[in-house]
Image (cartoon, rainbow, N blue to C red; front, side, top):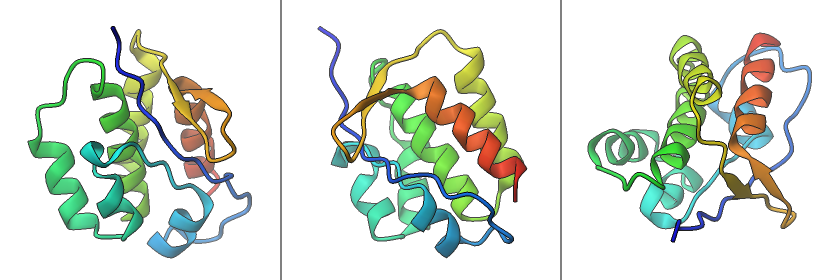
Length: 123
């Protein structure tokens, strides 16, 4: 049975003039359960979150959520091209699992990736 990952998404802001971690993290915060660096992302401990996301071998069902979180982390730390590449990888892939939003509404990861790319293009 496929594991259900629970995530939080705070609404995406429009019209950012700069790509700094404060602006990005307040506009989009995607968190999965604690096994996917959620606690470190929430604490804005970017280096610890990145270390966990790139060094952990996630189960097949959790890899998509780790990619979404890593793409967010890259955008929050100003690595726009890396973030866009990961979001595009999500869009090009087959997995379109649901992540649970802060409002309790499930949202497909491909929609999250599309919104991420659109937000990054507007920076």
